[in-house]
Length: 247
Image 1 (cartoon, helix red, strand yellow):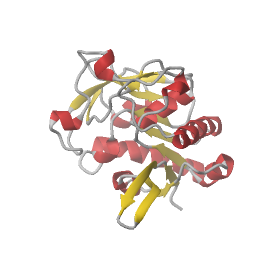
Image 2: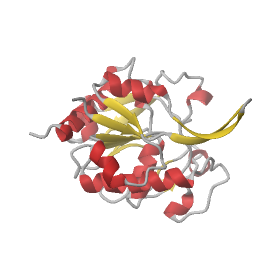
Image 3: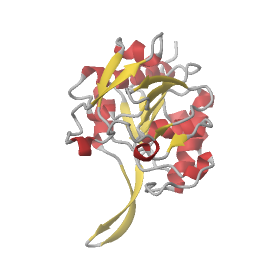
Image 4: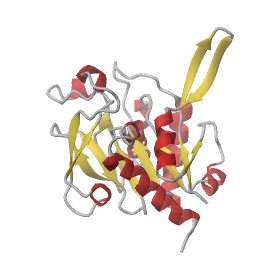
């Protein structure tokens, strides 16, 4: 049996000729990356209430990208650039992170996902990088004129036997970039293991978990063309396989 990897989607309100509907949406690149790694993807809506039963079904979970978290969750008021706050998703993601950590369910956070994991564990965020750090790099593929499947920045990986080093086997990795927020203060148990040259946190891990990795970039958009990014999903699925078929 393939390990089941849950993926969180984003709530959206979409207008069509036949009406307006609240829906859940997710880029197919997440699904493609999990399938290519040998996992069985399962999209999980934020309306799920029974986390115990859900995590009984899942062997691993991906917290995907999306809009900004509510700054009230880390005791701040919204910056003028804050957008797309979704209380339903915020509540689900943070509760699911805490439960996944408690149960040691392999998890991967991507873009908003690293921020959700950080806030769930008591950390804080830089709400707007250009405002807070004027000399920071441009963390936007669009502004850089880059496609989603292209790399635009270099992340330096911390020394030591951290999870990203174990997966990638190098001291740096070329990434894409789609964020105006980032980790400020790491949450409990989290260690920073990757950053760009401007000091922006790009990767963290939870050493206490069998697999707890969070990255600020979008490896699912790069996985089809870059083996080092596909390897992130392979490592998640491998860890999840040990959950579904314990020794």
